[in-house]
Each structure stands twice: as structure tokens, then as C-alpha cells.
Image 1 (cartoon, helix red, strand yellow):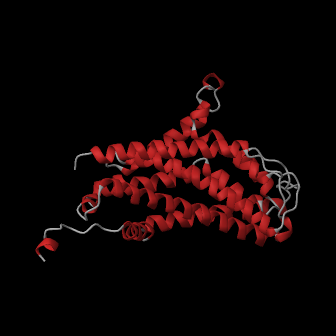
Image 2 (image 1 turned 180 degrees about the vertical axis):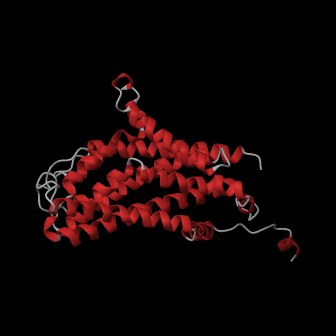
Image 3 (image 1 turned 180 degrees about the horizontal axis):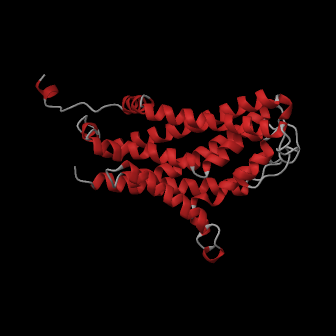
Length: 289
């Protein structure tokens, strides 16, 4: 009995911490509002393209090849396969990174500002386990946002265009299962890019108590990266910029599917994840208080 009393507080299980984090994330009204707005994006795009197409202002051929997210919109009219991927491509350029930064900012900086982060450390939870739980929470949120957009895009495309409109940018008609496979690949690839953004945002979030600073930093980084990618004078820097391969999502809609750009983008995102989480861990384990 004496040994049991002297053993100290019991460690909280990782699964329990993860469930608590998910409850905290998905019970926040702000999270639900953001997810609802993201779900509206593919529906609004699909309805807008259908109205424009029926009025004679939209593209008459849905098989036109697009270049990046904006170019894909011209191919999404009348094509239930392109619509969800086009919605992901358009929002990947700004909206999805911002929502990811919002989640990462709330994960560490927000709780630190509210004084609730100290309660985690008194649970007791080591700082490394705390970062792991927060990272899993951000990763789950981004996965949920991406999958939600893809599902709404598929449903909207099928309602507007029917199952006979599943064809690639090269004109190949796909079965429903094959189309779902391509959309799943796009959703997984976009989620990996967002995990990279989230890792960097967590590193920033570990260094501040102001969540908006995390959002502004990610916004600035996204805009600056997009501008630098347009400048040939700094082409040596382009391979290190995360948005470099974001336009490669278009390759998923080709048959056969080129994999060079997608693989390069996935590898770059994985490097960002490792670097971002390493910086966050170094900061959170040495931070006082």
C-alpha cells in the first residue's frame, strides 16, 4: 500500500488524450462554422458553373485541360470527376492553408493565451506527448476538412451532371469506382500538403501566445511563396517552396496519370512535416512555463 502511494501520478493514455483533443476541436462553434463554409465551396462552384453553362456563358467542353486550380474550373462544368478536385485545387492555394493555420494556432498559442495549456502539463502530460496530441488533432481536422469537401463535391457533381460525366482531362471515361479512386488520391495528396502547412504553423504557434499571428504568418508565407514562384531570378529557390507542386494536382485527372510532380510534392511536404514538427518540439521542450 505504501509503495502504491509513493508511485506518483498515473500517466494519461495517449488514446484518451487524443479523444479529449478531438472533442475539444469539433465541439468548438468556430470549427463547425469553418467546416460548413468549406463544404459549401464545391456546392457553390458546381451550381455556379451549371447556371453559367445553361446560360451560354460557361465552357461547352468539359474535357479542356486546365492549368492549376483556376484552370480546372473551366473543365469542371459538366464533369462530375473534375468538380471535387477543382474545388480542392482552388482552396489549396489559400483557404485550406488558412484554416489549417487557424487550427494550429488554437492548438498551442490559443491554449497558452487562455491559460489552459498549463492544465495539460499538470495532467501529467510530457511536452513531447502534448505536441504529439496537438499534431494529431490538427492532422485530423485537416483530413476531415479535405474529405468533407471531396464528398460534397462528388455528390454535387453527380446531382448536376449524373454518373455519365466521369471522364478525365484526356477524354477517358471512368467507372464510378475508378473516379472515386482518383478523388481519394487527390484528397490524400491535398491532406499531406496541409499537414506540411500545419507542421510549420505548429512551430510558429509554439513560439507565440497570439493565434492570429500564426494565421497571418501562414498567409504571408503562402503569398510570398506564390510571388517567388513567378520570379525566374530566384528559380534556385523554387524547389524549396511548398506550393511549387500544388498545380500538379491536375495530373490526377489525366490518363495515364503522371506521377513525377505528385511524388515531388509529396516528398517536399514530408520534409516540411519533419522540419516543422522538429522545430515545434525543440521550442516546446525548452520553453519556460
